[in-house]
Length: 246
Image (cartoon, rainbow, N blue to C red; front, top):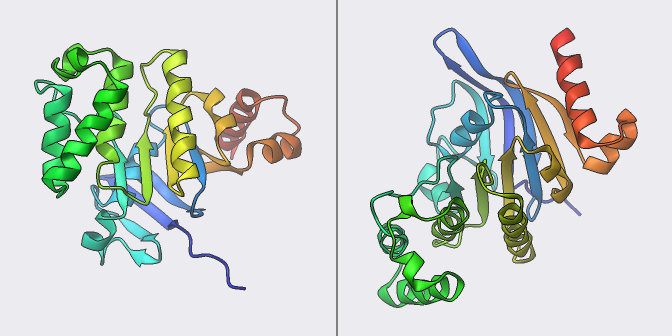
């Protein structure tokens, strides 16, 4: 039997802004149906990498393959496979939640009947009076839920979530990860960036990035065992420290 083609294959990926190297030749795979946590401090290169994967940011060197397709040559096809939730909740703050859903559903090409079904679905999850408020006025947990809902409107196969739980309370974070598990059960592939180290336990594998380089990668339990660390925080701090000494 041949191995499955990776959902995401990153090979020797670089990104420079002038003389500054934000990403320094990183390589990794994400298997179909896998949840991979992309861990690192702010400024480590997580968002830059995700934007190169989506095609929103030009690659300086290296390749990104989505389902075996080069994202620099087949971007139009690849965009239909990807869902992206940006770090800053990619919603229009002066539109209501429902108006945001209607707008993004329209540009995603949803038929009127599909859009109405999606509106009914979100109205069953969030109180109608909240959905009619401007998105800038609703709590962060609701904004997060609406942003994820919008990301999923085109039914993407691969979902990239950039710091999706930043700024929300622990209960909202738990609810969000329950939704991520639900997506995995539906066969979706997820790459989730975060600087919340406790979220590593929710992932099938983790990749730790620091100063644009991968400093550790693998299944959380296996990494803890091999590195002889008691928890992810110890593992993370050790990886950062050792990287700084190289």
